[in-house]
Length: 171
Ligand code: OFO
Image (cartoon, rainbow, N blue to C red; front, side, top):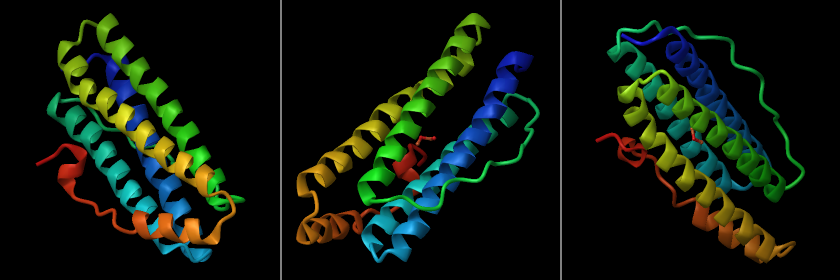
């Protein structure tokens, strides 16, 4: 059985993950609007991945016989001044999520909830990957600057990203 404090914090994280999905879906729509289909594809896959993160928390709360409480999801931004600005916003958001995950780990330690601690380890590793992959795209965008050819190449590259449940750690 989950302790109240842990259950509340895990429920809040479902909302954060759903907001992450919303934010990236909004970025995907924006990229589609400005004719960058590869960027749109990357963000759409990211939105799906965030939905899987939310469901991992959802399933875990259920498994521990806790109560899932879904709250209102806030409205994300819908436009960014450049692809670089969007990815910088994504990195800032991921850094915020990393802090949240670390905070959840802290609670699990304080509450002596070893099962939750082990469950959260997957997210600790995932955040390292998430920040690194967004940072990599930021660096590539900085490298090409205003070059249309460079932007086209990155767009083509990001268009290759697919989404599979296994990319989230689920088989
Ligand atoms: Fe982007 O990792 Fe979940 O939120």
